[in-house]
Length: 147
Image (cartoon, rainbow, N blue to C red; front, side):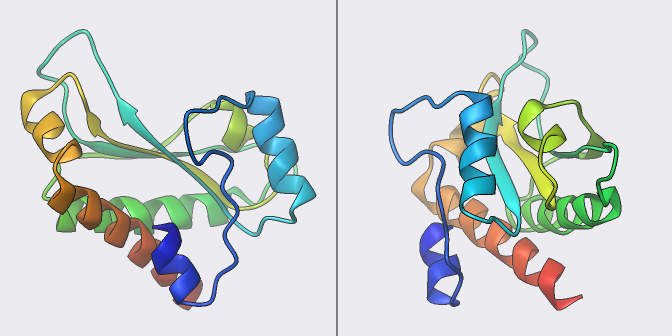
């Protein structure tokens, strides 16, 4: 995803590029200190039930936040992932996650799929699908800026 965005002219800052674990507060501060324009947090979900599957994307409504922008960004990204990776659509939802709750820029948290589900896990560990996920998130961001 980073390479695709940079190739399109974006300046990309990553809160993590390896096995480091900055606190949630550090991630928010990093984004603010680097004058981030949007924030996309990418995750893999897990559940106690192996039947839980699919992609879901979260945004947050907080005081002074233009949450409609968060919601639009979430919809564009979620739609691209569901369509291109053929994922079950768990929808775009409001979520209380610290990193998106404490940003003043459009911010989303993407759950690509469930590692606890066999079908999702097969995609999550497949290089072809990793590329599909990256392209889908990139396209969702491009769509957000285009509209």
